[in-house]
Image 1 (cartoon, rainbow, N blue to C red):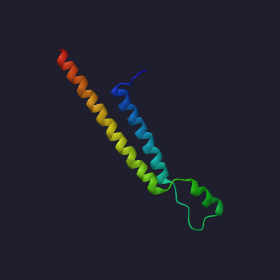
Image 2 (cartoon, rainbow, N blue to C red):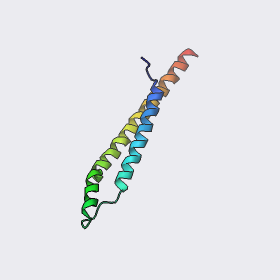
Image 3 (cartoon, helix red, strand yellow):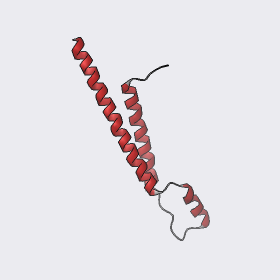
Image 4 (cartoon, one colour):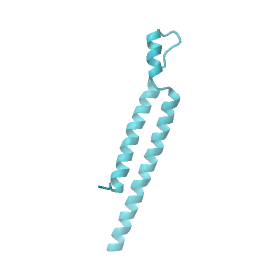
Length: 87
């Protein structure tokens, strides 16, 4: 079993947060169907995520990015401490 380094985990978390935030931004920017939309357009709108869940997803991605940044900072501090001990 291979265990990822803290750096790799933090970097992967940042990449996941970025793609999640990108998708949430796209979902928020999609135009809402108007009240006079055709029935087929309304059926398509049911499949699309609503603005509230897209904004919650954006907030979740933001928190994930912050946590991943914290992992990277802690990993950097640990490496710095190890280097200071060995020198």
